[in-house]
Image (cartoon, rainbow, N blue to C red):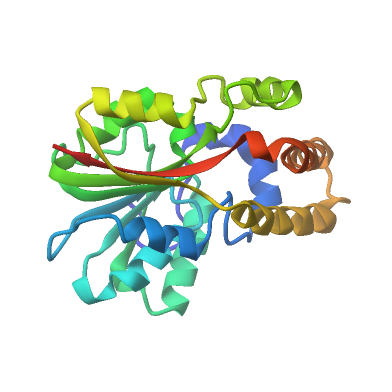
Length: 257
């Protein structure tokens, strides 16, 4: 494990090189906000010295919010991601903010993170479980929690049973197993997880993220090899503008019995 930059990347991240180039330097690589992170954290019961991991942490926007909010507990946060360049950014930001003792970046696969079973009090993840799938992600992550441990994460979710065809087609390609809130909660309860709370991210969380995306698109328009990725991101922004009422991110806070 690297203790400081440069962090290695998992080999499968090579397929995402154009997107990683476009997103380089963005503080958030998906919809979210400090306010939403803190709202979810307020619903999480924690012991005095919790064991915490942020899986699929990216460049650590949520990791740093958690580290600041939980600083009095002196609980280090394992920040795991497959993209080493994002972990480089996290390490540098944590150092600049005086939070490095509380943030421990590590390269890894969130589907197989190498965390001992039954060792976590809080498992955090924003915008990443879709890479595993809802049901499989819950099964894998549940085993990492101690009894009474909590997982808090966002996931893309249908808000309508019959969304506009354009949204259904696009998300069918991006996330074919995307569920509704009701279906997701039913699956969670079926796996023995208690629902402590859930809420939809406000649309402003999306537009703040898209503002960063558009700024990067303008900056990178002349870079070789990024035209297709930029066009794809602009199509995603346009879809949300037209059909964002039908889907969005939901924060789910679930507790292991």
